[in-house]
Length: 64
Image 1 (cartoon, rainbow, N blue to C red):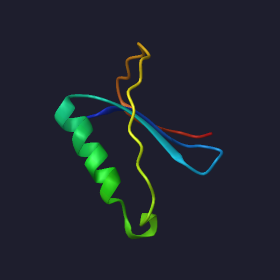
Image 2 (cartoon, helix red, strand yellow; image 1 turned 120 degrees about the vertical axis):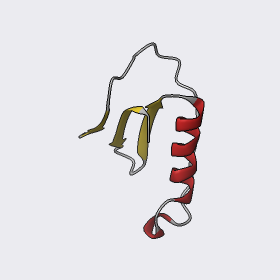
Image 3 (cartoon, one colour; image 1 turned 90 degrees about the horizontal axis):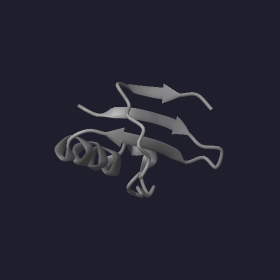
Image 4 (cartoon, rainbow, N blue to C red; image 1 turned 90 degrees about the vertical axis):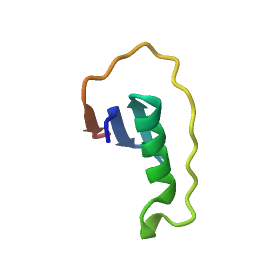
C-alpha cells in the first residue's frame, strides 16, 4: 500500500498500526481499515498522529 511502519496485536485485544508514507498512501490504509473484513464489523478505527522521530524502512508484523 506504499506505507512503512508496523502492525501489532495489543494485550487488550486491539490492533495498533503505525504507518508512515505520503498522505494519500496513509489515508488509503486508513480507509481500508475502516472498511475492514466481515469479522470486524462494528469495530472502531481510531486515528492519531505519532510525534516520534523514528523512521521505518519497511512494513512489518510485530509479534507481542
